Length: 363
Image 1 (cartoon, rainbow, N blue to C red):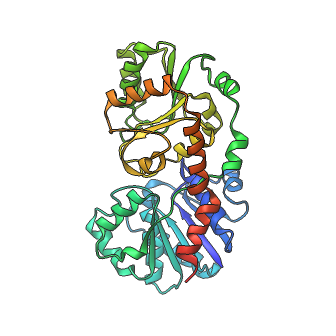
Image 2 (spheres, rainbow, N blue to C red):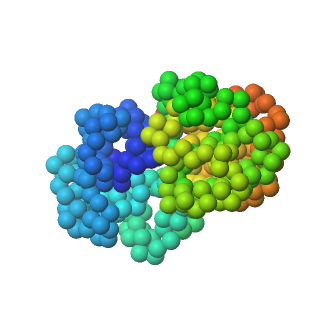
């Protein structure tokens, strides 16, 4: 079987996602990955799969709207390579490949949805209704799957499934630095209680609540720090908030790190404060490091953390600060071991490969 995987870009977390799908699908055939945007990058090529990687190097303008020229280019690629299965990440890729089907090409198509609200637009729902018997949609969590089903009631529910994002546990473990080394490289105090956060500085991630909750906690535990890895449009407003709270030395903005996964053992607690996080790959990275996790009780993150970590109501800074206090005063090794077991049971390449095989490849 020949498989084409289409990814919008290789920006985080989509490089990890593309590698995940390549590793799964390579067990069933030859996989080619197409990145629609992003410059050609040899390290991305090697991390994805090696030689079978194509870079179209498109910018946002060229990807906007119904681009007939790009669809024709994709049509020729699929026709010439005779792909049997096309796996599309996000709606734009789904739309382009589906249009190739309308033009007469025959192949199986899977669309992977990584967020909420992708089908709010009536035009999208109407277009995909044309393919309800020849397109399988995957949500990266049950929450995303249910959002798709609710948005498109006319689409057969048995053609909409959950396929969790996954992580190569052995590969991640081999990269993660020991606690003291990780702290030294990040410039963190050796003996402080460190709360970590990794993600875009964006309203969806709600680092505002995270910082306000930390401010409450730090009053009682002054030997604590909050380390935020990531960049984004809210960087300056968040720094301004930190200054207004008098926490310039306690809240550290470490910027975007391409190798952030290496540093999770520097944290005593990992916190994710997102609003309706579709999944939360960073939670898996923390679970590999056997770091306790706390997340907002919404979206796919709640599914990952349930039973093996702490949850708090979204945007509730008091509840989050209380979870910080509990984590500080209680060392629960058993819970982190349970989180590691849950990781092995649900979120590895081997487990998700079996789900892919059962749901999609065996008819």
